[in-house]
Image (cartoon, rainbow, N blue to C red; front, side, top):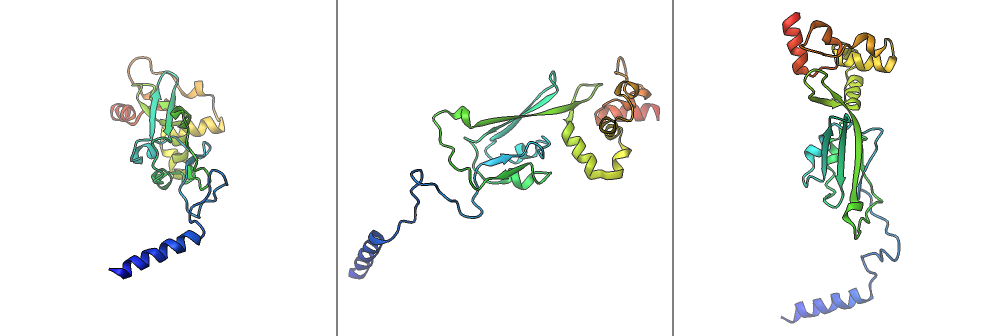
Length: 202
């Protein structure tokens, strides 16, 4: 029984005169170790608004809402709920849309609304049925990954034409007024409506 007591006493004396393992933050700046998982930082230029990060977020700190009237997708990130697991970074389809910072770690605040950030992305909406297809940036990203195969899709052709401006939009797209017709192939259509046109006329 004596040996454990002596060992504990020795550890207490050593700890008393040893340097503390903890830092003096916030009095002194804290330097995180390599690989520290801090606040996820979004790079809007590389984020395409594809919903992947929202789908894999365990605490549902990332949510999205589609505003069809304004044709935008609103992505909300609540860092008060974030557990800094890194799933959003790991599953980002572009690889650079979100990165865990090794410097931003102090998120304490008296107002939780300060921890909420929003982001907006332009939507592609089917001109026939009004369903949301995806964001325009997501479609452009997929088009760049497909390469020459992108020319097989009318939707991709519309995006390529918009980028290269080979023809005016009003010259190739005629609004869907009643039912889908063959000419409506050149409109922005969801896969369901496009299939109906192809089955009916081709």
